[in-house]
Length: 209
Length: 371
Image 1 (cartoon, each protein chain N blue to C red):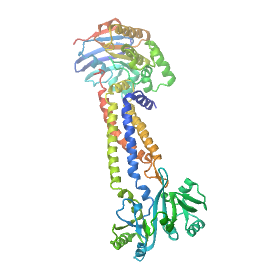
Image 2: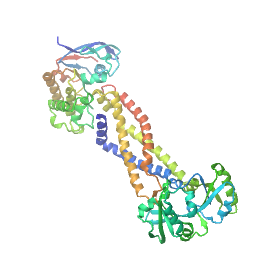
Image 3: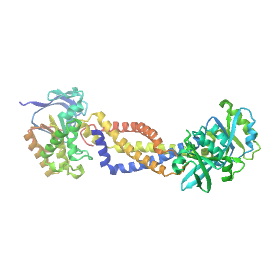
Image 4: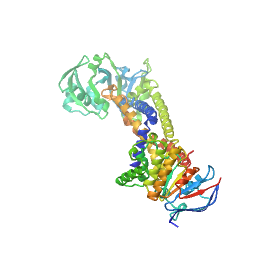
């Protein structure tokens, strides 16, 4: 068994009852479930956006509900991709990717280098100066992906990342995420109702409604 | 610095959204600055020309203090009253020497004037002035304006006079005046036998009310009535005598400021509402709560400051072009009065408005699902 990145132990919260889950480093973990089955709630709990009723959630062995400066810790350790509205419309793709590094006060030279590498790895190096309104939906999701990988977090959470994409774009994004997972060893936890994600998954958890 | 840059970028890139708000704000700041300056400054020019230690005897119920006509013979009737140390008379008149440019000229009793007004002038120059019936002494501002030399014979607006000295007074309005001999000035402005006001020096300020009453009772036979008030009050009466102008200006200013503040608060709220998605992204990016608050607070404040300064500057430029009386603007410079009042008010109101809006947006940013 590999190194555990995420451990969910006996977590209960609303619709979720006694959830137990283990995600290893480098996993591409897909939680497949229809809407209303609690997958977004589970992701909210992993990033402490909702109070935990019972159980424990550990990332890299640390109980996240016991971390005092969680905002800062989260920025360094957890990456997020939403279904849509991932980008700040008044910032360029480059600036959106740079954002977490600005918060973490990474120096300018290093920031620039990491932003370019991240944008290149999602195939958008040439579109760094574009504002979100000039980007296609799939490109926006790629920028969001670049933002998460730029900070090299312990885990990347994605909630329905392909929910607003067409079939072709979905395949392209899934392909890219899978490729990045293999190439960089990033750990992904993806919640979706889209079964095509299975193709990139190393582990799949299917929740029933 | 990152926060200021982000806030400024947000304004720049949201210009289409911010533009109407900023434009309205510029207009309001301009109107507000001008009204405030006007309401505060309209009487300053006159108030500055008087002293609290002297009493002025003048004709009541005149539309303008400059139009007051007090018969010269009244002076001898007042002279004998108790508590009066000294007495003199002064004739004032405004001349327009160029479009939108005017000067106050005054006719005084040279042997008395220096005892009443603490002017700075050399004894030799004042003696020359006393000796020459057509001689004048000019304020520093007048000298700077016309570059007249001492001893020069001048013709201004068909008035001929000889400059005999240059004086300075702490009450700056006098420095924009030309002072003539009373008799010559009365002739020039066709007010022979009349003063604009008689000035009384009393033995103690405690006797001010008693002297005023006695003097006013003395002239109950005057058809328009005679008033006796402190000199400051007299020259400051212009505002009062212009009806409710000053009061209306202040009401208007108050109303305008209320509107301005309401606009700012609403504008800020409008700019920040529905920004919870942005807050959510910033939170995810690792920006601390304080930084997010600062960013969303600074953004409207920057916008307000930019437009507020713009509006005040516009008012200032227009103020420069205003007519002057003896080199004095009738209204105080708008930028001199607005910053403290406007910025203090803006900050206090914005503080409450913005904090409440950010709190709401921050709360709404919870949850990963975008609604």
